Image (cartoon, one colour):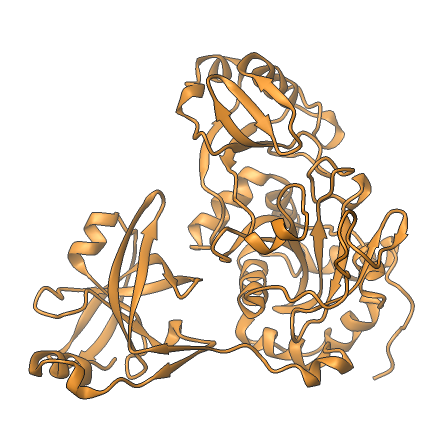
Length: 439
């Protein structure tokens, strides 16, 4: 089918994609960062933790500011736009908060800023707003080595489960540590198959070298690229938006987290990628995509650049027994888990579920195992495996007599290769456990 090779303009974006595919309810939720965070948490999607939210001045005045962590935090308006009103603090000690660009704020000054947020100083149409404080994610070490001032994020445009175009937004001293292009951040275009940067753009024009470094903007490999694309596609699905801009941040361990969902994402991403967003959208508009997983496959096939065929895809090879961290909210426990490709779904011991307070979904699943058949309840859990965060829907059972309190099923093992271990590494009981579980 012929496609339009002209860049996508604002009017065309609104008329062709936002108006027909984004409902009013979904747009209102995306415009409210607190409502978005609630949606993300409800769907078990990784996002920075919430520390506090304020709806009136009294709540700000009575808040125990000493309860905030010394490693810093971020204060945001619920309905802000273009990065306005957001202040990220990298340190908070003895009543003094230091921002990512080195400015110092007293508690009185932070409260004053929060009052301005409530008064609508940063909101759309300057209407009264809410204010909240959330976790400040420490950026992945690679970005600090590249000279980022603040936390870079990856904007992914997703349409009907398909990631269409992406860019790395790189905060600089000029942008005040914010990943906002209008303030002076740099946008790196990214190849959809490999996660390698292809070009870079700022409000001053094309950028070939990162400022204050000798690092070329082309050829930087974004870690955990497949997970980023899949998380973005799942978030678009959960948001109710047909066309969305999903902002993803990699934390200190390289785990992707959702920062924001945008119902009207900007169009500068085309400059960074030197390509037309409209062309890509028209290629896929009438392709039925049943799932985010399939959408990622389509994106990597259709929107790969020529050089990407020479790049070998990254695959992690793991042994059967691996340490994992199971978490929910502020609670986490590290245990040994068995990676079982014969089991479809992840299974977690009931004691571990209770200890972490993992939320039950109210649903059950029929399971066949070595001990027989039965119905098991399902819980949501965040599982960190080999540097990758998995948002799992796991079954609950009594594993007290088993060696491993967690079984990771093949549903959660996408992107890994499992290397079999020698049977004589285990006792007879372990062999029975290793061979006897299917679901």
